[in-house]
Amino acid sequence: MSSFAQRIGGLKVYLAAYENLIYPRFLRKYGGRKLSQEDVWGVLSSSTKLLAEAGPILDLGCGTGWFSRRLAEHHGAAGPVVIGVDQSEHAIDRAKELQKQAGISSERLSFVVEDIEKSKLALADLGCQNYELASEVWLCGCLHQLQEPEDMLRRIRRLLAPGGRLCIQTLEEPSQHNQRVDVAVMRKMGQKIFRPGEVEKVLSLTGYDVIRMEAIGFIKLVVATNQAAQVERKNDE
Ligand SMILES: C[S@@+](CC[C@H](N)C(=O)[O-])C[C@H]1O[C@@H](n2cnc3c(N)ncnc32)[C@H](O)[C@@H]1O
Image (tube, rainbow, N blue to C red; front, top):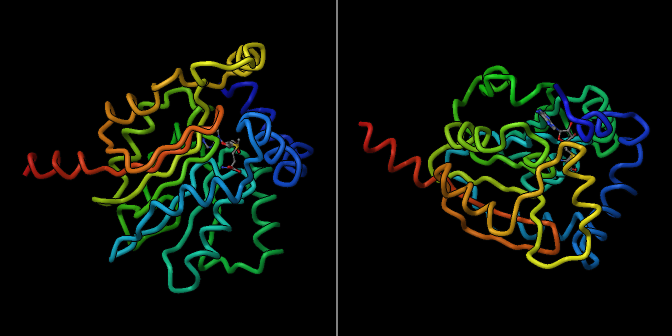
């Protein structure tokens, strides 16, 4: 069953105001300084490095597709295809509308409605027949909305090409803050606010090496790679 936070996130009125009003305000409030979407993009994208045989880039829980569009524009026509996935039909409708306004072709960027916790997360099912593994997975604002975040991280690791990158923006409670009520409300709404230091522990447990990590207020930004998966695969051979 979807959480209260997931249901609110699928409302048309919320989605219409999301990119210009709700998300910037959220980042400013919980980032503890004038943090913007561009800042988040800057931190995460600066630690990625596309693989030579670049499979698609997945933006899981893409919402209205801000990061999907940014990725498609950044890599250009020669770059890998970007696939945005979200469980909310309304979010994907809005993402397609904004894609059209931005003039980004469907060969470079496509969107799929899918619950990533219920689906197989197979690239073929997401409209990508040429590759079995993704070169990057972006998970912005979504990990803390999932019922089983650890399980999802394990599944993403298996989907990533060796040396591929996982870019995360999530919520982690700083060791000292004065937002106890907000945190309690967010938890009540079904969002997981990670405990201090928990994100890196979970990533290590699920087989990732962290390449870059920044905590800006409650906003935790991480770029990780699945090097452990390569070792595991080699050991299996
Ligand atoms: C806070 S929004 C972030 C949207 C976008 N990534 C961004 O940063 O602008 C979280 C999104 O995750 C999506 N989401 C949550 N759980 C999901 C699931 N199980 N499968 C697919 N999408 C999910 C929600 O529908 C929502 O659009």
